[in-house]
Length: 123
Image (cartoon, rainbow, N blue to C red):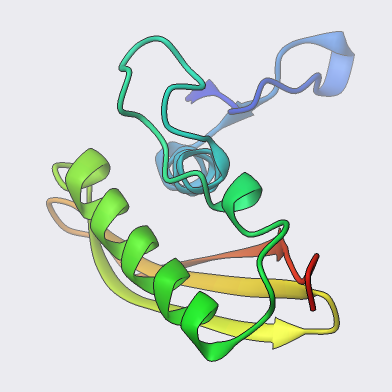
């Protein structure tokens, strides 16, 4: 068991823990929402999708950018731990919903992580 990321308080006012697959789900979410340079170690960590989509108009082009950025960034940063199977983006009201399907390495069942990304500030 590892500590949940981001850290959370669990039962008995102790740090919440997660199994290996839940830990990977947490890492995928954090990686996608963290901006490059926002964390010191390592300096290139993060896809920056949260901040990058806030003021962009909702469009197919933005969706395609999010898909490409998420797939490429995850493969580069976590490629030794996960295999990205699919990334889907849909527009819902004023948010982008991203769904990442991945498989833990070396062997594991596929997992799905969903995110609601802010967007449509210029829509």
